[in-house]
Length: 163
Image (cartoon, rainbow, N blue to C red; front, side):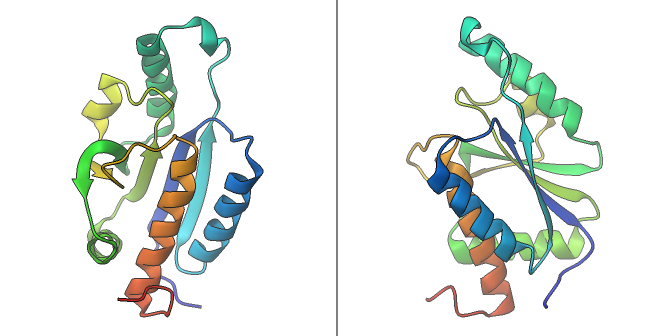
């Protein structure tokens, strides 16, 4: 089994998904990722009575929940459509660099349906965009997990990624 440094990687996400195909995809890629790194998926619960709040109030309250979970020792990366884009090879290099030089935990964050609060943007260390297209906050979980697994496969030189 091939493992990197002791740093742990987290994926924080808002709310559970009710779609079985997303749950299956998440489970499959999380198992694969754990072959390479210490990894944990953390689900921040949906807001109670969130359907009675405005979009800005939802972002603010979700932001408060997120910031309660994120430590000052975490390197926080928002998965955000305004973030920097990477090819799969460049993202693998990004992960490798963080594994080699980052003493903090690496936390990737998928926001809720309405995005992030200003406080979360201010706390973020980096922003990454997975596409110029817009995806639901649930489907992006599987897309991100697949890319994280692909990055580790590239780093290791495994057969999963074909150039």
